[in-house]
Image 1 (cartoon, rainbow, N blue to C red):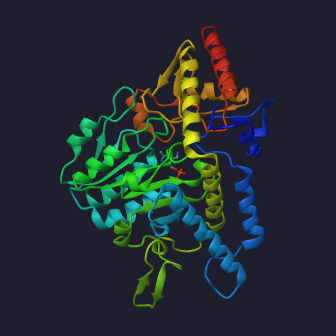
Image 2: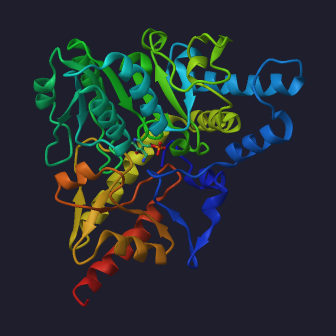
Image 3: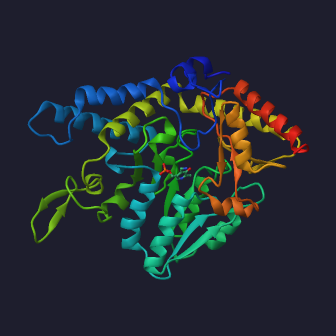
Length: 409
Ligand code: PMP
């Protein structure tokens, strides 16, 4: 396939040589977490072998090395998502902590009783629960953008939800349960016209599609490192200079202050103000290496190849008798969710695992959208650019077998 030499790419990921139940591993659980290329594993090892120190420009050399490596990672993140400054990038544990940070700092300061927070029916629990917690604290009201039967947002309904009570719109860029790519540009534009701030959950979009903060124009954008070939335990809040400057700190402690007395503390400017205590230095550095790796492959090449994989898988899966796709929006990324007549999703997942094929089976931390389709669970293969048509063929063959056996059970 043009753009991606998949055999060469696969050699960059040591875990793809694992065998499971006697078969070569097929990793189709990329929406849950992605595998790590050797350059990321090596970069984290190099940090501990040659650079490890807490970050502070103190007297010694290793502190300078670790500080440089950590701040360089921040620069790479800023470049990767098109932020105007590295100061717009806050390191956190992941998308979940990122959304909680925004809810607890920006939210507590700006949300009052009767204010409205607009979410969509597609959201991951990480973009629902923090807002419910804030709403129950403040008396704010949550409104939900509904979806059509394909799993795409009903934008006309979105328009109707917006009013001068809308203080925040927080919507995913790509649904982790269905793969729907949402019209984020229009969401941001309309939300801003209503005077709201906008948060875009990029956990499922950054690994698959180009994102650019300048053209997107959102106030906040969040993602997790582990879903874009980086380590676990590291993620990002992007916020514009304007919103971050006006946000109070969340956690208090070392690093986030400029001066402390028993009477009061003075806080660092962003992003330091939001990074209390010793952060996940090594894994931030590893995330920087992951993003540089993705830049070398080329996110547009990745997008094109994965689009091809999704189309290939969708066409083949439609031919499996009794298989029902869940989520059929025209714009989709990476995910092909389904149910199979005669089986619980978990049974399908276990049967595929017998053949070395790893898929998620469950509610995908997105119960509201599955219930919208009358389901409690689906089977969810999700692809990355190291996956192949042969792997999809193996999965589809196993599904045909299950489908044929269903009647005999
Ligand atoms: N949002 C979306 C759309 C996700 O898919 C996920 C992870 N499944 C999250 C948020 C939460 O990410 P994390 O668990 O890495 O904090």
